[in-house]
Length: 114
Image (tube, rainbow, N blue to C red):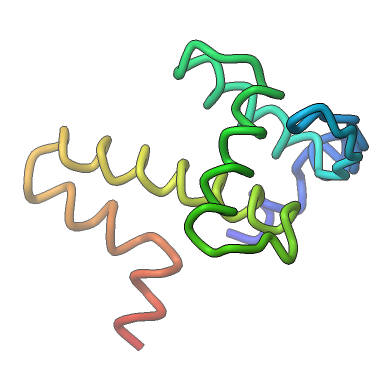
């Protein structure tokens, strides 16, 4: 299984900084290329630009938490949660006997069972 991950294209985990405008203020965010790609997919699904989606996330986390202590980490976790939801919704489209196997193969499910 590890081979699947170690053979990933290094470009995917290379970090890239982008300047994003949030309410007129320019801020630099450094994320892995794969995270930027997932944010772009999420933005496209919402009919927004990546920058507009990031600004929306910033506003929402600020309104919910009152502060944004580590926004880059928040964006990474947001992307992982987005992918988890995609896997879960794909699993619900599979026949019940198979969906349990798909869900149980996820690392979080294995950790909960341990």
